[in-house]
Figure 1 (tube, rainbow, N blue to C red):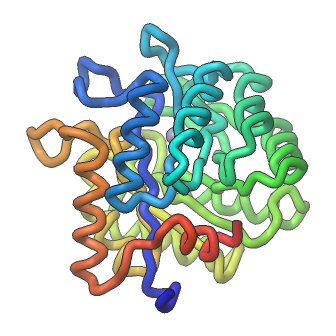
Figure 2: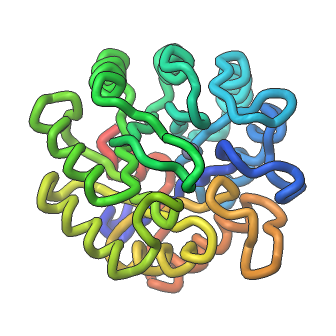
Length: 280
Ligand code: ZN
């Protein structure tokens, strides 16, 4: 295994809560198609799969049976060692108990820890109350699931500082900088540098990954790779592969991410290497 500092982890977020077949007919929404897509993305170089599920009518969901099915189907592929990362949000306004159950029962290696509440896309409230976050952090420690600290603006990084201080989050920390979500920070290189520097202030030496939704995707991907970060791609964040062109699959995003990493003369981390980098 060569130097881990030259490795970059690709996370694929195949589904998310929002894209529909009307937005892009290729977005995988049901368990069999999600599992198949994750498997193909793993073959293309993704080390982590960030998972969401939908109801039969495609609405955003934290339906435990659906998660159980997706996770079961992926784990049944015996050659596939991809790291699973289960969302704890799943959409807006979902019940806390439903948000907590999938990671607690299914024990993926990673689950998301959305480190604050925000006005989501100028339409609704993405609620992660202090009480919920304390409970979430405690339950993650209880079952040994690593939090991916998702931050949508710098204030959320300072929230993380508080949860680090109070022991709700335990080292080693891993951050995901989620950029250009309306209501959060804009997806620019300057802002990514600020996010990384703020993280270094509160949790020096932590690992981090970044993505920009929509039009900021390429800038944030290039900047993150150049700055030593890991990256996330996929249809949760973009239904377009490039301006005016619908993505054919999540694999297409993973393949492009791989090419970009390799153009930097870096290497794509395997799941085994990602486990070492993240301390799983
Ligand atoms: Zn997500």
